[in-house]
Amino acid sequence: MGSREPIDVADRTHTVVTRTSSSSDDVVTNWIEVENSVVELVMQYGTAVHLSIDGPMLEEHSPETLATVRRLARLRKDEQLLTHGNLAEYRASLPDESQLVRECLTVDHETDAGPGSWRVFGIHELAVVREDAWLYHSVPHHRRNRDVNAVVDGLVDELNEMLDTMFGSGSFPVGPLLSWETDGRRYEIESDHLRVDTPTWQEWAAFTLSGLTDVYPEPERLELVCRWGGTPKTDSVVLRGLGHVFDRLTADPPTRIGVPDRETLDEVVAALGTVAEKLDYDLTIHD
Image 1 (tube, rainbow, N blue to C red):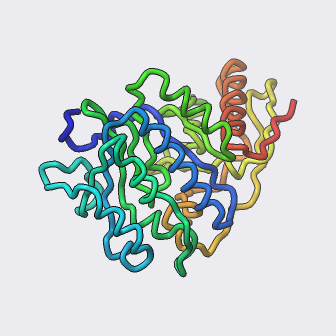
Image 2 (tube, helix red, strand yellow; image 1 turned 45 degrees about the vertical axis):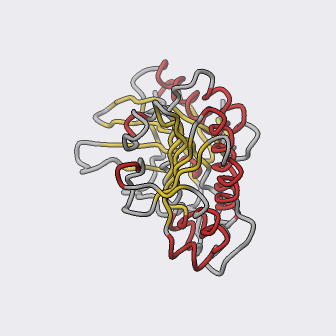
């Protein structure tokens, strides 16, 4: 990527995931804290931060933030890198304007729309870049759009070390952690979801692993027996915007998951354990 080429998310290597099991607005606060920590870390390796904003949203709910953003350089169309929407885009030079970036992203007040609403929706898109590549890209109101382009040696290790200290968050390689097929049904474990497909379905069904409470491996039957808890409920506008509750589920979660062989069973158990450890899920894998 040249310094003025638009962000291409196909370059992403990892994604940052924050658990979705709580129904509290604290989830939004935690989500913002995690993202701001990621931006803080990645800024060490960048030369600029690009922000696109919903001006009316910030003007109504956080005019101080809008005033801070406007202290940055506003970009012409041919200078813009962000492509999600057709909004005003600003550029902060690093490291000189790193403090202004912090002020733009920090939530230090609430609004009647809920904690952090202006941060989630008012900061419409952001990216940390260097001259030859983008490093971090986010569409804050889409919780699954927090991508890392690990072109810097050691960046993912630093990111994982930091996220290990933050409750319910982790980074995952793009794509499935594990995929397998048995009895005409395909399965994938991808970050915080189990995805299932059969020839009779028109699309994959995705089940958030935050709802998985118990797994009983049965090697003799080549399957895992699964126990699922309830679906989180919330009235939060912000959480609904983040897709916190309304992940599209097209079927009930499977209570039995088949595998083709013992080796795959062990790999599934290990992958589920990895997700639970990274995202602090209350999952028990029984002997």
